[in-house]
Image 1 (cartoon, rainbow, N blue to C red):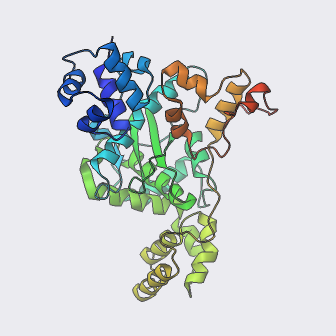
Image 2: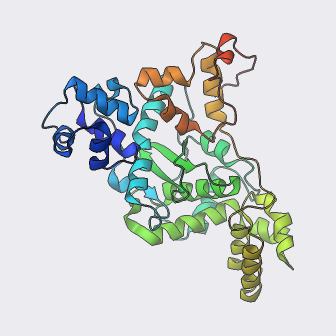
Image 3: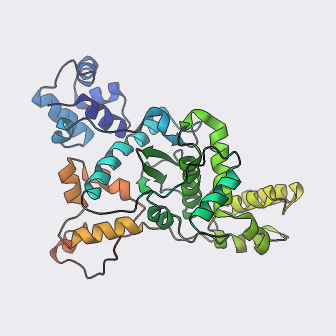
Length: 361
């Protein structure tokens, strides 16, 4: 049977209003409204037009009711800069990711969540230290955020939204934590975004985004403390004379020059006067939009192993999409930026499986 909620999901994913979809599909807004509200099932010709316009398989709209995050269970950043269309399109990625994750979970034993509920902790820095201690990280920098998150049972997906207004978001699905990252950002920014969303997962699991600016501030403080532990910062950078000192040091913690400068200021390693001068210099050098001495983008270890193991059985992302009645591009977008290779999707690569060794997950 036709599922109207799936039509709404696909429309949001494509960033279309009801009126825009009706116009593109060549049907009346009233007809589309009655279909989306479940008052009428679409005629075969109408369903064909809608599927073609949205670039979703027709069978997708005949599927079961899908699972989506609760409205209060998603923590978004940069809400002031984000349009409603961008927000809805980004949130619509979560149900599709759930479908992909369920497909994978039925075939692989992935790590279970190993997070703490730190919602009672009032000091985000203390919460970051507690989680570091729980994970036995000590005071050393985190060399690879995505691999660490995956090892601790967090499901990581990418947001290929083609906009810089969406940083990412996080949510809990029962006992499984999810993080969605906009991989258009620099590697340093993505690492900080990942730590920011980790902060939401452990600090605000029960509160949701309704806590507003205060929750965002706490997640920022958590991320700074988690990525740049105070003891390590003070040991390695007890004194700063210029922006060049920060440029040389930022690689150790894998953060942007702006993030490290801000952290040094908050720890009173640099004065207000020094910080103002450094911020001005960062702007003059163009470091707000282009990160100097950029790091290579982090890759997913879990998705690489999963896709390589599937390839041993001649299965690719296209087969996942076909099984789930999803457009291939949607599966591709969820992994875009998490893998540097095309993940065995070319026609030539399908003639012969590559040689590799699979490490157990």
